[in-house]
Image (cartoon, rainbow, N blue to C red; front, side, top):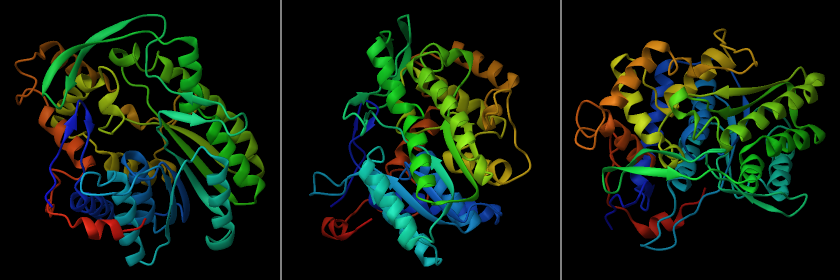
Amino acid sequence: MKVEMKLKGNMARSVNPNGCKQEVLNQINYVKKQGDYEGTKKALVLGASSSYGLASRITAAFGSHADTIGVSFERGPKDETMLGTAGWYNNIFFKEFAEKEGLIAKNFIGDAFSLEMKEQVIDYIKQEFGGEIDLLVYSLAAPKRTDYKTGITYSSALKPIGQEVSGENINLEKEELFIQTVEPATEEEIEGTVKVMGGEDWEWWVELLKEAGCLAEGFKTVLYSYIGPDVTHAFYHDGSLGVAKEQAEESSKRINKNLKSLNGESLICVSKAVTTKASVVIPILPKYLICLYKVMQEMNLHETPIMHKDRIFRTMLYGTESNYDEKGRLRPDSWELRADVQEKVNNLMAQLTADNFKTDLIAYDLFKKEFFNLNGFDVDGNTNNDVDVAELMRMKP
């Protein structure tokens, strides 16, 4: 059967497994072109199936020749009407390409927040992965989390705090601008967002891994965050998600204390804005993204997730160009927040209208292509959209 891109608002409702395979290969080839670097050799990536998590796993494996474990919550195919998620196929094809090069690439599919998943991963590390890991990447983005210690399920809400925020957003399905109004978060929603998107679960992963003796000397762990410019702060950095990220910074401090005996290190990495499944549904953010991409592309600064994470791994996490701020956070987002970049972005945003946002004035086409790429469509290379459903059903991650 042939597959085609289907959208509902800014969410994809279809997938091209062939395109997913090609996109994984394109990212691998990008890393290989940058050459080898000395980095992680045994890595665990939580949220490994797409965007920053997948990019981290690819650069670790194909830039530093690391064995990797990936944990993600994805769905496989059921029939012709439900072919599963892009991340399901990303996991499968990453493993295929990694194993061809003699690397271990273990995929766990399930709830990374659960105690059961933590125990499964720890058992695998001890029994089949050499006993220790030297890197843990925490790149989870989820709508809900069940606290296994209390049984309470929390939901996240990307909302402002103390004020209603309105602004223009982009509807990819209809290809139009619309005014979006976001109500302020309740105290319950703020608490839920902190529980889901903060650092508590990250701490628990590190604690359990350490207690099990699964952390190598000099172990590193990193959680990805985002701050962004002033224009996005009302609905992002100063909103419920910003509170969650501040809590993650406190978690990082506690993790660092816990890792002293191993000469280990916990880091918050403030990444730049990129196209992800999460970023395209964040209120009002897409308007900023299409202007940012235009400016950064013209200034030869634009990065996709693989370009960004590969740079971070080889120059910062395992290089000599670490760029820390006053809070000890890694700041590879400095390219995005340069004064000259932001001045041009603000000028573009002021010019953007419903009539011109799809023209060459703005990078809407690039934004749309990168979003389609996440789901295996419009990928550079061999992306045949004719798939064999029976063959897809036989694939296992």
